[in-house]
Image 1 (cartoon, helix red, strand yellow):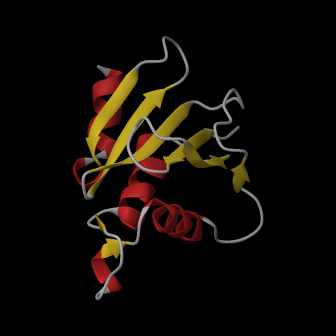
Image 2 (cartoon, helix red, strand yellow):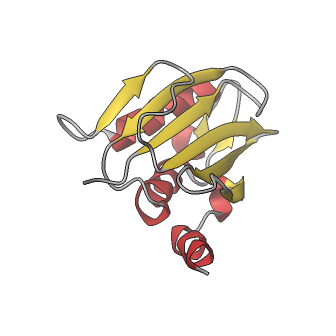
Length: 136
């Protein structure tokens, strides 16, 4: 049995519409999917137009496409769901949105009391620290 998770990528700030929802069937825990999200999108600034594509995403649609491309490595495990989908047996919900020119990440543990286990800059996310605080 895998640790299911969903990722909601917002089309701007936290109050904007959800652009896309991604479902991952396995390794959805913070040291799995959370750290994968950071490795794909971490260190990137949000811009509108670019000269050097190495450390930027050209808006949230670009960020969503880069995330999906980075997560998908063959058949199965990662799926695109209708925007805003929930209640698909997920144990974690990740939400990515723009805050100024930076990416912000919220991670909710959707089992038990459904508590928020992380909210902060994507660049500061540490899956091991999140899991350690959950266990405490």
